[in-house]
Length: 260
Ligand SMILES: NC(=O)C1=CN([C@@H]2O[C@H](COP(=O)(O)OP(=O)(O)OC[C@H]3O[C@@H](n4cnc5c(N)ncnc54)[C@H](O)[C@@H]3O)[C@@H](O)[C@H]2O)C=CC1
Ligand SMILES: O=C(O)C1=N[C@H](C(=O)O)C[C@H](O)C1
Image (cartoon, rainbow, N blue to C red):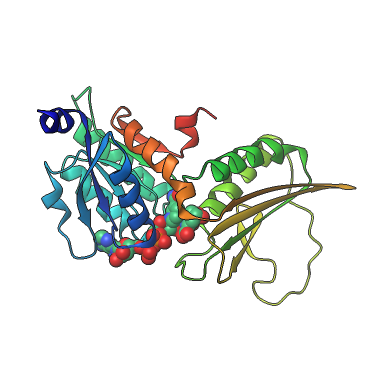
């Protein structure tokens, strides 16, 4: 009788990328959550169409090269999707939005996709604070620091942070950041994302860290977030899993769920 009650009330979750660093941590977190039921651990080579009927929500922590295709396959299989994998662009987000419109047509309880570059509360807040502060400062640069096994640079979090800063600067009518550099070695000033310089450090011992440096004559504001352990991402991931079933369509960023 108790088993039947659990089966009726728990939310069945599949983890895609289950053998990876994040995937393994998400599997443990879902396993430990009393209201969630880990029904599938999928990784490279598994057919995502076979997840149909075996889970209501899939969580994707894979690699930038495959995550968009995974989301389309998971939607076709009828699952809500939470995505932490990086590599998303306005174009790929647009294709997911279009796909959702098609599968959700005429369905009030349609499927949801929630994509967030970072699920750690400190990082989500840091991005929000940076966006809020950006219009008050002449200079802005982003430094992200990660473990050396990371395949993409700059991080998805740093790209999003830089884009938010750039949008806030444009809205405030600020011009380009001051920079007298005339001569440099390639890469010395980092990557430039919408006019904001972004620097990537890869160092053994690190997990995921970011500093936003904002400068004015005579003053500086530093906003720093540190994930020392992948457990930092889990409350956000679990919140997204529970929320996505109530949010038809595409949600980008955990800040939407947190009302920041
Ligand atoms: N949003 C967030 O809060 C966070 C996002 N990330 C992002 O998550 C992604 C994964 O990071 P890690 O777990 O560190 O990487 P990882 O390399 O440890 O794991 C990736 C896993 O995906 C699997 N995989 C590759 N292709 C696949 C496919 N077609 N289908 C199913 N599985 C496939 C790999 O076999 C591997 O097990 C990265 O993009 C990273 O930037 C990482 C930490 C937090
Ligand atoms: O690869 C990682 O580790 C991380 N990836 C995400 C990113 O690129 O922003 C989130 C976090 O920084 C950890």
